Image: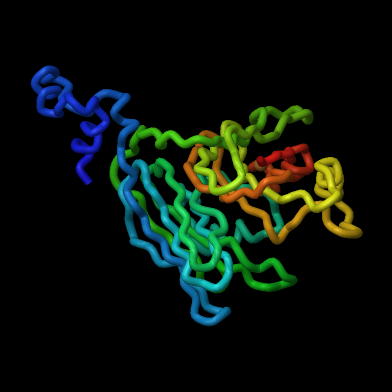
Length: 307
Ligand SMILES: [Cu+2]
């Protein structure tokens, strides 16, 4: 890719890049902040593979350049697959990180930063998540599977690894998209009456191009569960806020959930979300970094009606 050509292509059609360079010889073409928004994402191609049902992998290059990265996940498996990222600031191994991810303990250590990647992708499909990746070492894993008792998750079957984001950090902005999902919290203060929640803008039935943004201090994800027939958001709130084992039919349709990966405060990514017309309960199941009650237990469940 030529960054220069790309940036110049955003200029009015009749003003050539050469003309701009002549007119503004000091800054040249593409040096100002506005033009940073035109940076074209670098593709980072991830393939989810499987040999039988017991051996799974994620295949991807060892490095990618820092800045806007379009992570594509091509699912060649017969079940849903995902690719969650975490930037690791210490010398922890892939297995060190996944041990924490899969533990009962809800604490999230400070050496796990940023997050992102793409949530569940259907068999045979490809999904893309675009975000500005900071330089560093990343652990990548598939957090699908393992839903049944004691069944291993896809990461435990081998769908895990690490890669390095090289070069300098970039301040490039994500491309504009029509819809936004914002996850937020009231910060790391020690008061008990914290506010957690979601805001939605521009979501419609069908495939949505969405900016998923975390404007809080804690890590969040957004899982969209269709409300079951005859159930309301109040039923879902009551069920997920309760520590007791559920009784009766569930208030949401677990099989048709869609969702994002986990991102840290200050991180945003562009993803696609397939939504159907109807009402959803949108939920975050994570806890604060210091552990404790899950966000859904503290009210991070909101209703979304899609038309
Ligand atoms: Cu959360």
